Amino acid sequence: MDSHIDRRYSFVPVEEWGIFPEARPLVIAGPCSAETEMQVLETASGLKDIGIDVFRAGLWKPRTHPNTFEGVGSAGLEWLRQVRVRTGMRVCTEVASGKHVAECVAAGVDMVWIGARTTANPFLVQEIADALKGVDIPVLVKNPATPDMDLWVGAVERLAQAGVRKLGAIHRGFSTFERIPYRNSPDWRLAIQLKGMFPGMPFFCDPSHLGGDRKYIREISQRSLDLGLDGLMIESHCRPACALSDPAQQLTPEELGRMLESLVVRRQDSDSREYRENIDQLRARIDALDDSLLEILGSRMDVSRQIGEYKKDNNIAILQTSRWDSLLENAISRGAGYGLPASFVRTIFNAIHEASVQVQNEILAGDDAGQESGGNS
Image 1: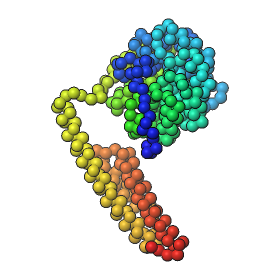
Image 2: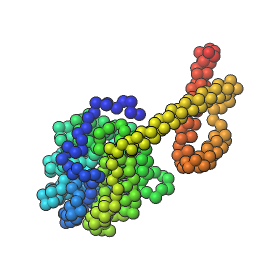
Image 3: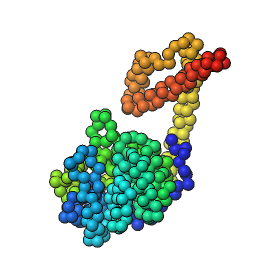
Image 4: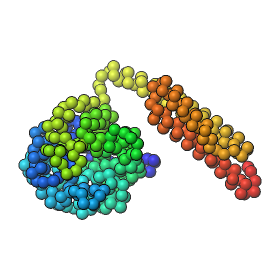
């Protein structure tokens, strides 16, 4: 996946953006939507009182259905300007077109972000990237709604190639048909993967959209900090029950303040000699175990190739569904005895199975090619 990524991309450290204070976590907060000037200013004042320095509010809202509240649009830019003047807070909003970018820059907006639906559209991302050329403001990129890493990576690349160096990512979860308590699936693996692809690029979590309900915001926020993410984008409204969009996932400024105070911020590293010695020993064990895993997987793949050869010689189909179902069920049962979640075992064994099928497919494909050329090699 990341073999094509240009490692020459360099990002301005978030400490040099002139947006956030030095304390962690970095926090962006404000209503899902700017609704009225009074609502915006009242919410901003409450957030300033609890120490928030960066205010967010959606002006252009991409809605699924027509005849719903789609944001106040450009009129809200003056409200953001008033927030900046009256509170000293930095302000940001979502953009979905080059026109939005131009209006935000003209209005003195400090930072913009690209929403999930826009990230999924390379044409719009490129339009936004072109509009940002020569513009020195931070840009954050939310993951696409579907778990498509290429779209997320591609959006970051388009912005980086346009010269955006104050660049960050936001994890807001992925749409899923599975029954889970959250609105979106966290799939932290993909967030960690992107973070590893772009070292030095700040990474935020949006627990409001990920959870879809205010009761989940704290646990998701803590999880993201435990995983080493840099900051949080959280929706806050002076009167959430009256919100015109996503009322269930917004906190009052006072509730947000209490929630932030309850979070435990993990350090990135420690100067403790005992810690360093112990962690190095444990990591050495992990490295040795990983080497063993790779050796075992290599051996297993060799056996899969041998099976493929036998199936080819005896004209047997590759897929043996009943055997695989039994094998997977047994693996999940045995994995439980080692404290391994069923979903983890299923993911690992399905990946191994797919690789084995691919190897055997290549063996049969080679056989077919040999027959077409007049013989078997």
